[in-house]
Length: 99
Image 1 (tube, helix red, strand yellow):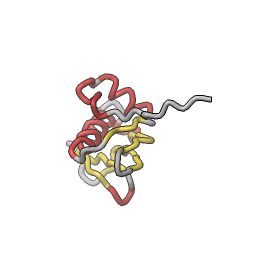
Image 2 (spheres, one colour):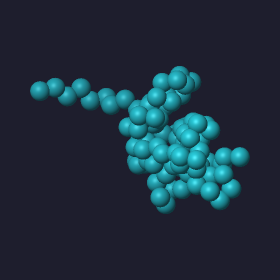
Image 3 (spheres, helix red, strand yellow):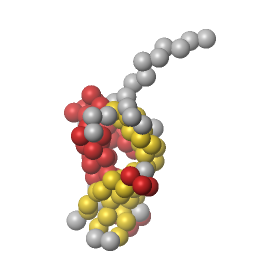
Image 4 (cartoon, one colour):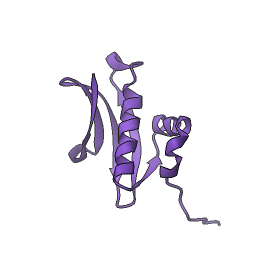
């Protein structure tokens, strides 16, 4: 069974099966948002839903903290695109800077 925890000291969500690290979703946290910057699943765990568990638990944690999600990581961005129930959490810059 995969268990996902937030390792704030390392700025990443960690997925483990027992004591074995199965994958991570690295992030940068500010007072307004959590920017997911990289997700990686160990080869032995690929195709077993570890990446989705990291995304689901990570984004649920962001929601619980009342923050927004900035999906820099392509995996997290793709996961969000397939789960419109989390669209309200996506960070969108209000700036309209032009040259």
